[in-house]
Length: 151
Ligand SMILES: [Zn+2]
Image (cartoon, rainbow, N blue to C red):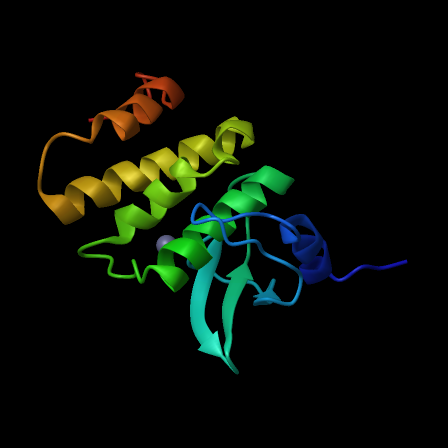
C-alpha cells in the first residue's frame, strides 16, 4: 500500500500547537511535498483562503518534532507574522522555531540546521554583533565550536 508523502506530513502536523496557542488540524492549510531546490520547506502564501506550505526536507530527519518545528517557521513565522523579508526579519521565523515547545525534541541535525540559519540571517539582517542571550545559549549549546562556519 502506498501513502502519499503529503499525507504522512499532514498526519505529523495534526493536533500540534503554534507558539501563539493556535491548534492545527488536518486541512487547515494546504500541505504539499513537491521537490524544491531552494530549501527544506517554503511558505507559498494564501491560496483559496488557506495558507500553503511545501515540504521538501533533505537536510534533517522526518520526525514529528522536526516537521512541526519546521511548520512553525513557515506558517507562524512567515504566514501569521509576515517575517518574510530576507533582508530584515527572516531571523525572527527561526526564533519562532526555537521558541516552540517542539524544539527540545528535534534532532541534532535539525538543531544545527536551524541555529546556523538563524545565526547567519540575524547578523546579516540586524547588523549587530550580539545575539539576544536566549538565542546565544541555543547557539552555544547546539553548535560545536570547531564547526568551520563558526565565526
Ligand atoms: Zn523561512
